[in-house]
Amino acid sequence: MQFTIYQIPLLLTSIISVALICLILNRKRVVGGKYLILFLTSVFIWSLSDFFDLLCTNLSDKLFWENVSYFGVATFGVFLLLFILEYTGKENYINRFIYLLFLIPVITIILVWTNEYHHLLRQTIYIETISGVLAFGKVYGIWFWILFFYNYCLILITFILVFYALNTPHYIYRKQGILFFIGIFLPWISNFIYVFRIMAFPIDMTSVSFIFTGLALFWGITREQLLDIVPTAYTAVFNEIPDGVIVLGGTNQIVDFNPAAELILNVKASNIRGKNFSELITEWKEMKDVFKSHVSEDYYRSTISNHDKYYDVIFKKIYSKKGLFVGQLIVLRDISKRIKMEIKLKESNKQIEDLNETLQVINKILRHDLLNKLTIMKTSLLLYEEKNDKLLFDKLNRSVDSGIDLIFRIRELESFLSSKGDLTNIDIRKTVEEISKNISIPINITGNANALADQALFSVLENIMRNAVIHSKTDRVDVDISSKDKSCQIKIADYGKGIPEPIKENIFEEGISFGDSKGSGLGLYIVKKTIERYGGSIVVEDNIPQGTIFTIKLKCLNN
Image (cartoon, rainbow, N blue to C red; front, top):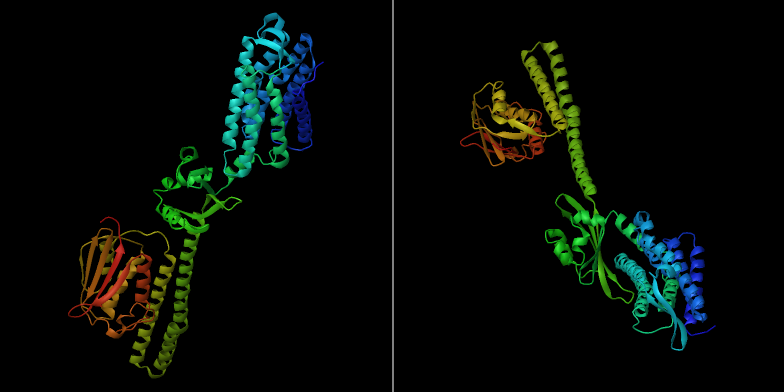
C-alpha cells in the first residue's frame, strides 16, 4: 500500500458527493434531481476508484480499480447533460434520445472489462513511477479516443445550454452560471492536461478536480438556491406574463424580450436581442417621444397608442445593490378594450343626456302645451254651445289642428330618438321631389348629391319647407344641392317674411316659434338634433332682398 497527498482530495470528493446525494434526497421535489444524483454517483465511483488505485502497488489491483472507475468515467457526461436538459427546461429531448446517449457508455464498460481480448481501450498497461508514486500507465486504444471525443461533445453542449439558460439579467442566475462554469470547466481542463501529458500526474486529475465541482454544487444548493430558483421557472414565468416586458441594459441595449412583447412590436426576440431599443421604435412615434422625453426619470407611466391599439406603458430604471444604474424595465399592457369601452361609455352617456333632455321637452309639451290646447278646445266648445259663435268654432278648429301638428312633431321626435342605426346613402334630389308633391307652392330643385343619413332626413327637409309656407308665407322655395369631395350642401331658400332678428340666433332651441301661426317650437329643434346626429351642421341667414336661407352640410359618399 501507498499513501499520497493526491488521495486527500479524492477522499474529500467522495465524501462531498455522498453528502450532496443525501442533501438532494432530503428535498421533496428538485428539478433535475434524479440525474444530478446519478451524476454525483458517477463522480463518487470515479474518485473512490482512483483513491484505491493509488492505494494499490501491483498492476492487477490497479487494473481492477481502473476498470471500476469507468462506471463513472463513461457515464458522468451523459448524466450531466441530462441534468442540465431538465434544469434548463428542455426535458422533452430526454425521452427522444436517452437510449442513444447511453450507447457509447455501455459499449465502453463492456470493452473495458474485455480489453485483454481486443485492446481497443488500452493497447498496453504498465506501472510507472511519477513524483515518487507508483502509477498506472497505459497507451490509449482507438475506442478511448472515441469516448474522449464523445464526452467532450457532451460537455460542450452542456456549456452552451448553461450559457443560454443563465444569460438573464437577474444576478441570481449569473451567480448560478459562475458556479456551473467552475464545477464543469476545472475538471474538463484537468482531464485535458492529464490525457495529453501536458503535465505528469500519478492519477487522472479529473477525479481530483471534482472536489471543486462538489464544493460549487454544495455552495450553490445551500447558499444560492441552485435547485430552488431554476431558469425553467424564470423562463416559464417570464414567457407567460400577458403584458409585453422588455429588459434593457445600461446602454439601452435589449437584454430580454417576452413573447407578448414580440406580438406587440411584431419582431422576434432572437433578431433584436443586443440591439439598441431606439432602433426598434423608429416607426412608433408616441413610444419614441415618451422614451426620449422621460429618459431621466426613475419611474414613468403613460398611455400611448399604436394604430388602433392602446397601451399602458411603464418605464422603470433598475439599480444594483450599490445603487449603480444597470438597466431599465419596460412593461406594455394592452388596454385597447378598456379604452374603447370608455369611449363607448362616453358616447352612451352623451346619448342618455340627450335622451333626458328630449324627455324633458316631451314632458313639458304634455304638461303644458298640449294641456293648454285641450283647455282652449274645451272652453271654446262650451262657449260655442252657449253662443253658437262661428268665430269660436274656427278657434276650436285651429286648436285641434295645432294639437294634431304637435302630436306629429312628437312623433318626429320619437323617430329621432329611435333612429340610432347605421347611416345609409340617401338621394337628396329624390327626397326633395317626394316632399314637393305635398307642398302647395312651387319647389325649384337644382343639382344632386347622395348624403349619409337615414329616413329622418325626409322630415328634416319637409319641416323647413313647410315652415317657409306656413310661417314665412313664401310663394316659392328654391333648393340647391351641391357636393365637393366627401361633403355635400343643401341650400333651402324662401322669399317670405323671414325670421325676426331677435330670435334668429335661438331659432334652433326648443320652444322657439314665430309667425302668425305659431307652432310648438319643436320643429327646428328636431331638425338641428337630427342633422347633428348625421355629423353635419345647419345655419340660417337672411335672403336678400327678403326671406330666409337654411344651409345644411352633410357627409356624403363619392358623388
